[in-house]
Length: 308
Image 1: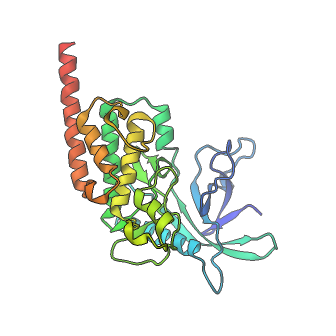
Image 2 (image 1 turned 180 degrees about the vertical axis):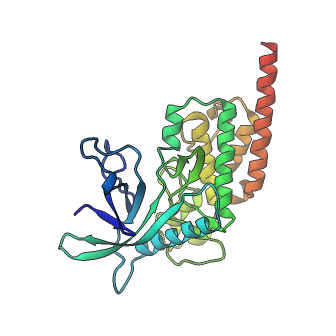
Image 3 (image 1 turned 90 degrees about the vertical axis):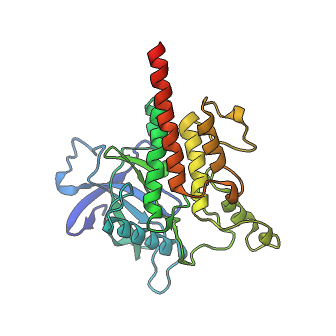
């Protein structure tokens, strides 16, 4: 009953993390897949699977499809577009379609799914297991910004950036989980009024405004639009986490930033402005500023080494 057949090949599903089974996201289940013919019961399940499958929790429905299933389909179409245009540093998709799953009543229901690459670790795991120099960390900031830039080139905004969605695959950083994306100049009509959009702990001010203010008398006094600037705010929080391991909250002061690099602090502090108008607005500008700090750090390191 647990066999999954995709394009005529049988796969055995198993947990992404056997130490913490479930692997259930806000809108999906994620499981590893190994080809049934290569599975050796004596050796057990391998750490690295043949594929990873993501299945939407919500039934597609024969007459009416709910917003969560529609949003999952938008994610699939965005990933297919990225693959077709060979956009680098974004999760690759291999299969997609409708899975026949039996519900508690014994009825067969259709759920959207897609298969993708396997990532051995996400950003949080990588940082916990690797002691990086400041130069290496700044290069990491640049790599992640370039990954996001590639997504923006197709006019998509991610809106759900957090360390769990930034994966290390084949020696490059890959942005994954496009389940909350939006597209410039298009209206998917998926977001509900006052819906919680974004990851808890990494949300932008306008995401919180949407949740607290949309559809209420004070909505007109606050910015509730989640767009590219919201991605940059989330990027600022991720950068802070990369550099010193915690998350910036409340009124940020220079003394809160432990790295002795004024230029780097000013970049991140600008990303974290409450007002969009005061944030860095162009990702090319951000990458340029980070590269300048990267080369300054190299020069400073080389100078310190020469006088040691």
